[in-house]
Length: 190
Picture (cartoon, helix red, strand yellow):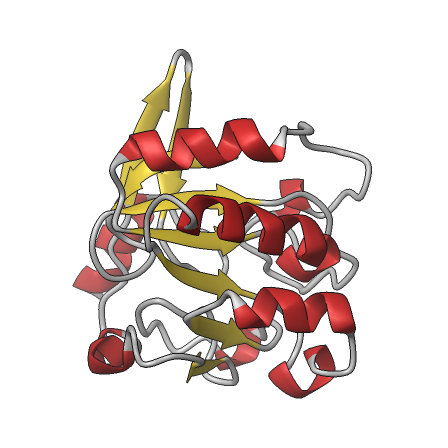
């Protein structure tokens, strides 16, 4: 899945890309439909790069599924986009940063990443803070680009956006166990 103009997955207007496939199966996962390794839609890297560039977004946020299962292709996608425009890149992963360092393909994606949110979603540690699912997840600046924006991570609210595609509505935002906006509103009243 992808959305070209998201404001709830990091600073500024972002192109959001959700990749397919995740072996972790975290209870309460926000994207269980992205877990199957054989699901999703294959996209040509060059065509996707142009789509990202034409979106006019300031940055790219990659989530999943598990982005590091497709680390080589994503690193190449980011390099292709950055040959034309210097977009900021945020990646969400269920792995810990230290685990990723052992894999050359993962290191290639890390080299193209400005901000990494790492660690599995743990339902019992979901504290409702913005831009991360649970308190065990770390926000790790890998470059200086978003260092001044770190206060966004950990705010007490979790905004969502709705995007309509034909008969489908995609709700976008960081949530632990997904709540529709109505449920989130009801929860905030209690």
